[in-house]
Length: 489
Image (cartoon, rainbow, N blue to C red; front, side):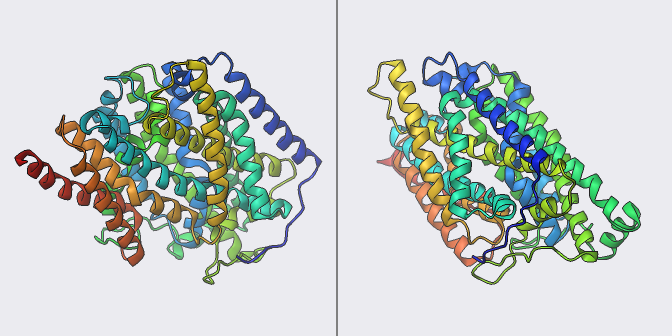
């Protein structure tokens, strides 16, 4: 990847804001971890977290650095078409609130993959857990990598140094506080992220001659405000059907099956609270994503009239990495003091991504793979839960470093998650309808779906919003005949 020259324009007040933020977040995370007695407290917060805190934490996890940096880059390079996918995100959350959450609270479970285990046995549950761990690690690794972009621009740090910095900081409070620290620090971080986006949206037009009207006229004339496309297509660009069908099914995975979000819903006090959290997220996700897409459009208008102060780097394939454009604007154009606050906004988004991934990966690897099966002492379970968090921190550092050649962090992260999302969704859905059965039809169907999605991803002819639906269909179409065959044996 092409290197870039740093722009050392952070001033004293910016550094005071940044250091103060890191100090407060880490101290708060450690303090919230006090009084933990067992793995239930560490991974589920004792199932005593308020729905609104969980909702803000979910929003922070799903927006994260991918939204703060990746979404403006998408609009900068194209238009507002991604909002069609967001419409599906909102609809999917509301549907999940009524059809999925109730199953989480029927018994004491730590992840949705336990539902597969209850229906089809431990081997099916372990395969599901492994699928999540592989795809979850790859997707989280890309999210960790995107946090390196501002550090490269602001400080000239290397990729490896930047990754190490973020993961270690997030590890500190996740190690001590578990999911409780993750939820409350995420809530604070989401507020900072959203405030940073609002500021930039209102600030950029003040730098453009003619202000708001001129900016929107120029964007409209060049098609940057276009967003609705009714052409049915499996490939790019985004279209309405990708959102209303593909994205809805994708959300069934991300918010119903993916441990990154499901773990927070499981930490709610009741079915009612879990539903409130998901519905609140469904209402909020549209304005949040629209805000950051609009920021990308404003960035495009601004840089049509002003030269980009740093040459946008290219990856090894010679394509511009537009994910750099927003951090470049922040360091080059925003006022002293505001730079520090926006820097904190990016770091807040980044740390919420890392801490959420660490907690989810640790809970699945210990609880679903059965590592605690022979442990009776609760303090020992808590100790090994923390060791597992450390292990996944090391893994994320490695995977994030390998992610540095991606063209778009948004597309890369969602594509990687989509390799296994359909298989996992299929496994859980089958557990609802086939209450008891052998494991091998489910295992075979999930493996078939995985290899099918790897092949589809390699062809590059299908865009990622369709991945979950296709993977789900592959898994179910293979598993159902095998269940019928198994009954005859």
